[in-house]
Length: 306
Image 1 (spheres, helix red, strand yellow):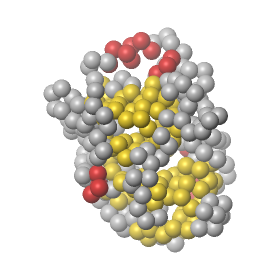
Image 2: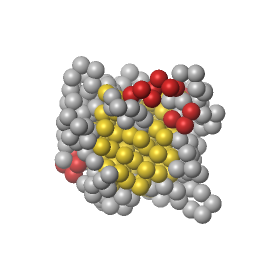
Image 3: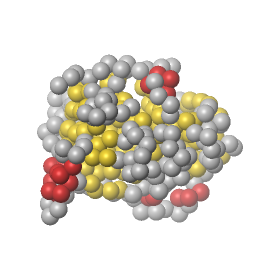
Image 4: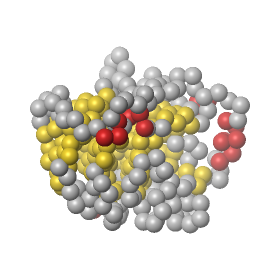
């Protein structure tokens, strides 16, 4: 079993660039579409950026902020942390100047994808995020589909959050989406991890990516900690393992060349049978860790500055 490739496992701090504590773009990754940045702002700080040839979703990981673009500003309530609740978010179109400001400070993910269409600057309310429970038993996990295809409109970007309770395995059975064909879409993917802390400090988890026997592909076995990223240009990926005592969070960012924005996957035939064992098994009773809040007045047109 091979260790993580340095090019695909990016430990916390290893991709820091300018204002960003983590940053991966297509040039750095060696692919064509997917990007991820993590921005930390102290109370009262602000950060301006140009979206360039990519669309972006500004997603609070912890804290709140205001996102301004195209003469409009959206106040994001955010959250206390990724294990605390669903968050609202803002969509920033390509070819735009935007600014993120935070009165109280926080940490914010910018999930991006190169695209061709310029869609409007928009607000995504937390109440509109579908919370899905996937798998069963020790393969149970929670998926927050904030920017999934068919949920929130984008040109290329697909992004979701996955929360896996301590001791469970997610991203399983192993699957891939590296070939454009009926039933499968070619999507580059970034995993960004945060791991729950224990009494003695930070925890860890594990991520596996391995080649397809027919087509080859990436090979990673990585111990992951908060702030780490794993890049997946191809190959089977899974499981993502939350070790006992430590909940695991990961943010998935995906984009690719297909004219259809869709998450179409192929399970590894050697392990696809596992899905059939879930019938009749209960979902882990610890899930959901939280649900989306009820809609509030003005969710669809929230432009209050904060």
